[in-house]
Image (tube, rainbow, N blue to C red; front, side, top):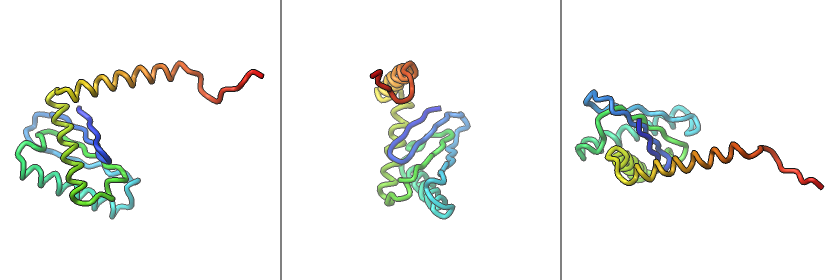
Length: 130
């Protein structure tokens, strides 16, 4: 699948070739209680439905998993809509294999190199030999 993150939202996309849009929502308990999580889920569902109806192709066919962090619940309606639009634009850039995808791959490669170097260093506080 393809993963993208913008602001407090993350999206995992899988083109399962069923030919329909299927969206699931993962709202962590860090967002708040059940009432707050369900409110955010309803707001996200309405935003995705609105975008799918207004702009054909804005939401791609396939399985989408939308994850929201704690900052998402404090967003106003327009801010949340803009976050979703940016998320879908980033997904489209990754799906089309544009330069954004190449930059992300290069960034991931660099992170792997940095992580490998971090594994070589000893952990814990450094002690002076004095």
